[in-house]
Length: 552
Ligand code: NAD
Image (cartoon, protein in one colour):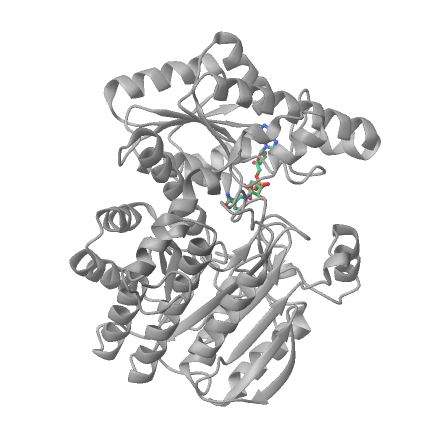
């Protein structure tokens, strides 16, 4: 079978025996669409080597299985490979996926990647192996929410007007920073060592301006703040050098972070004195010196970040492990910088809010626009509706049209039922797939990111994502996944996901009610259990679940 230029079928005609199977097939194909995937030829969707299926043979067999799968059968996917089909029930998920699980003692990079190289397992990241990646919109929205939550917490405001943000890295994820800042009214200076990355972001309109020097960038920043019109500016250079230069000038940004790929010491971080063109040659020829130089540069950059923090900047680690690297490089106080989840996003997770999303199986962008309009009309949440308006203006669809928003406990069910109703009434061309990232309220244990610094110290407790997956399965999600290692790498995270298809039937409405109550509900319980008052308040108000400890 030809594996080039994979695109999900569009329209409202089934190629399978039911919309759950159809949704799974279309979203798997969408994950490998060249407009969506990072390296489709190698089945890599995003995030290092986050894959959608183990190999092309496994991919073909998954598609074949989905095409013939009955409405009371369940397909089992073991690390990207379809291994069995069982008669279950109509209410059960059509697909169960488990990716990259390793017995804890063996859950190290060395063991995992050796097994992976031998074709025995697959790294599924979060939404790659669980077939619900939506391209850049996901990180754009996440970064928008992080900066918005910062505005709320630090400035007690719903925007960052008049503030400026210093960061680095305009890669796959980091490239969303300038636009996300601008959407919050914030001016940004982003340092990037690779001119091609700057050009790409200028072309995509994720970035407004480019300068060769920090002085020029500072001038543009001052003008932007004076005029009240936020501007995003890239400076070509090494982050460590530019951060130090700023420190030497005694200029302190309002907000500081970093999105170089510092987690990857081989390929992700360019040491000072080298360029994007020659740093790999240096690594190949002098691996030990290279490593030393990378650590030195990271330590220098993080020292400046600590300096800015000491002078009043809001500084956060944005999930790229730069603190760990700096600590390994000898900077013992690197962890004085907070991770973005405990600093800002935890308050959202505590009320069951997180990256909720939906994709139009029709392939028709109008289906998403109609849902946007319905949300603007029916959902009473200014922040959510502000985002929907901004997304409509700025987001270009990649592959199947999709929308993401942070929706909380209660809102998700309301939006899900509203979408199902629109499908039922024939207002949309075809059913809608509703799901979320694994980076969510009750679905992840990841002590360097989502569950860093939990109030009760339960950071590494991984019962929650497993309970979440089991609960979503028995509640009737269309497919459910449990993964290991997404976001922060092998050994560092266990997480789960689901997708439910809204096909307009009464049966789908009942499932949506159950799943979109249960899924954020367990997030509320997880946070209540860890001591978060806002979660306990929700439970006291009598949600559609009970808690033996916190219900009245
Ligand atoms: P990427 O490899 O696509 O981009 C990294 C960029 O940093 C590149 O453009 C590179 O040229 C630039 N860079 C490297 N060293 C530099 C230096 N010293 N100075 C200036 N620029 C430099 O990576 P990405 O996909 O954008 O991800 C960035 C990081 O964010 C990764 O560590 C990733 O794991 C992490 N991440 C965070 C989240 C989150 O939710 N916060 C999500 C996914 C990934």
